[in-house]
Image 1 (cartoon, one colour):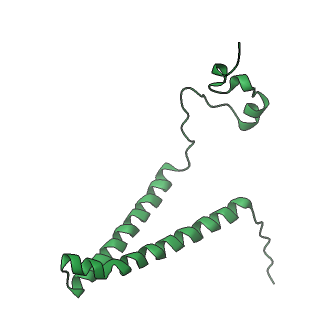
Image 2 (cartoon, helix red, strand yellow; image 1 turned 180 degrees about the vertical axis):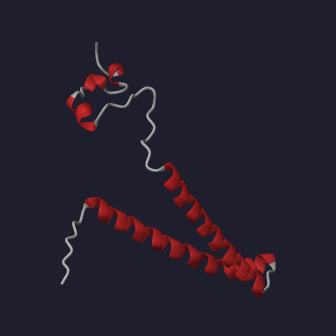
Image 3 (tube, rainbow, N blue to C red; image 1 turned 30 degrees about the vertical axis):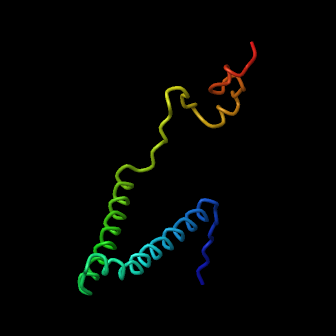
Length: 114
């Protein structure tokens, strides 16, 4: 018998919830297109065969953008968020908490009575 120890982390749970939400939106999106097909057929005078092209083209385009986003994520990787010039980045979160004071907050000096 093989025993596998699995450690559940907050990041793992968050990832699972995010993937579940994405799957739900994917199915809902395809369903919305299918519900809109009769209206598209009436307003654009499409035949039944052309309606299938509308649904297939939409889903193929959606999948293509998903692949493109995944590939861009692979190429670019995880990046640090950009910082504004008025608020330079600190060396670490611990250092910023340790050295923080109300006077160092952006815009604080305009509220402090001198």
